[in-house]
Amino acid sequence: MNNFTFYNPVKIIFGKGEIKAVAKEIPADARVMMTYGGGSIKKNKVYDQVMDALKGHKVIEFSGIEPNPRYETLMKAVELARAEQIDFLLAVGGGSVIDGTKLIAAAIPFQGEEPWDILSKKTPVTHAVPFGVVLTLPATGSEMNSGSVITREETKEKFSFGSPFTFPKFSILDPETCYTLPPRQLSNGVVDAFTHVLEQYLTYPVNAPLQDRMAESILITLKEEGPKVLANPTDYDAMANFMWSATMALNGVIRVGVPTDWATHMIGHELTALHGIDHARTLAIVLPSLLRYKKETKREKLLQYGERVWGVTAGSEEERIEATVQATVNFFESLDIRTKLKDYDVDQETIREIVRRFEQRGVKNLGERADIQVSDVEQILTMSL
Ligand code: NZQ
Ligand code: ZN
Image (cartoon, rainbow, N blue to C red; front, side, top):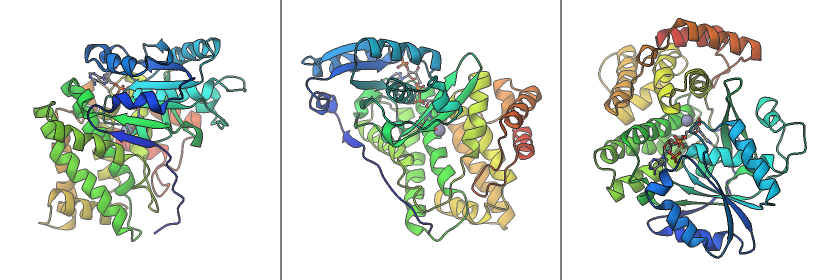
């Protein structure tokens, strides 16, 4: 096992009826800005529950944070928060609202030229306004990590940042808030969480059986519970299991002491930036080709994943690896997620554009062995056409 440092200070408050806990988690004298998206929280009454809990607090609202949150929108929130002297943020929504709120939190006290530098130049965040979360969409793990992914509309760039200052102070996970999720978002959530685990597991062995088995248990739980929530989104137990799996998939626990890949995410972000394809769908397009392309260097873990998660034991190693990748594809497709670029009307021209962008940015050495170069990205995407 590799050396590691593990730090995760996020307080999780889990279960039905727990939204009321925001009242005691936010200091009574705080000036709170509640951030949310396009209004799903008004339809499902999450908004009412939060407002009711915060009736003793000073609260202003900032709504309209888009899926794939836009820098331009978030800067309006920063302006409002500064004018109102906000000192606590509360994100109510999915990954986009949470990620957007992380940037708002870091940008309010930002002293440099412009907060975009945090994303484009990796200017370190040195402090941030504290914030909490009420999660309404299990998928990204953003509720229990310090990462954030932001899109700049003007340049069609999608970049990420992370900082020890952008962990939520607390996150409330009430599975009942997810009952209104449409099938598209439920499928996205399952595939995103599943791929998060694979990015941290499907690399090469370092004799870390605990991390391996924890990763496999999340994969198996997602495989079992995902179809249940799609079939019945008001099945509390299934939703609770799915919600906790998605959080555990990207809160840092399974990553400790093992190599991680993340090339699928890096490439996928370009497809969202250029074509607006849902994040999870970009992963479903890239991952199978990446696994096939890197099957030699991922051989041992692919065989282990196939056997332990999909029960693939028959045939030669070559056949087992292909059956394992195909089982993954079949799982995604069973959730109504297509896995080819052509399914999204994306062609060779986009591959050329991604190659051009990566070359311009000097992107290199992706993947757990730092051996995926731009020419490899081109081949992986070509396999996904
Ligand atoms: O905007 P509203 O009206 O709230 O509607 C949202 C949005 O349209 C809707 N929704 C959310 N909760 C709902 C609901 N609809 C009905 N009932 C509910 N309970 O769902 C739509 C999608 O929401 P969004 O927040 O965009 O989805 P998700 O949670 O999948 O987040 C995706 C974003 O997170 C980033 C992605 O790149 C993408 O920008 N990621 C963040 C990560 C992180 N911070 O660690 C890691 C991930 O790999 C990912 O990159
Ligand atoms: Zn993801």
